[in-house]
Length: 128
Image 1 (cartoon, rainbow, N blue to C red):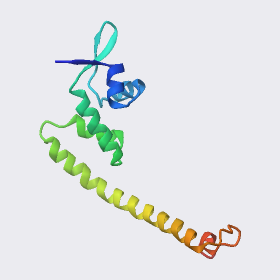
Image 2: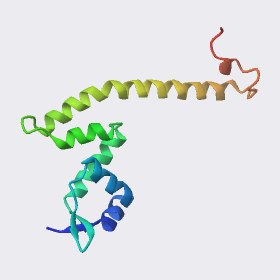
Image 3: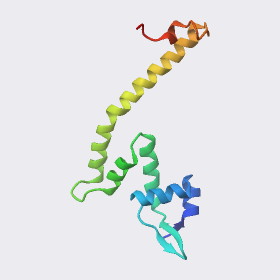
Image 4: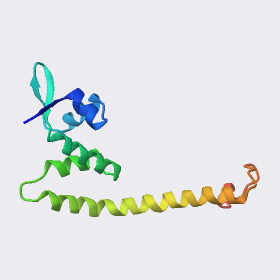
């Protein structure tokens, strides 16, 4: 099986070596083998890193990802993923709503055209 050193793994994933060491310390990556004093991982770790990055982009914390990757023998990974994703969806929905509100506020400000931040009613906020 092909082994990848930390430098090559970093180049192929776009991650810094320090991030790879950090992921290893958190248990997201298996402990690296040592060859000549340097860390090496099996090439299969590339797939694991792709999953970690996808989960991070979806808003999962490293702790949540660790739980998913750790797995429990009596629960298949697909079931764990489903449970984790079902808990995450309401958070993502809230984030989308808040982001849409911010987008709408910026669009309204542009449409107003006043560009006078001192007197703009849109920036004044709710009346006290």
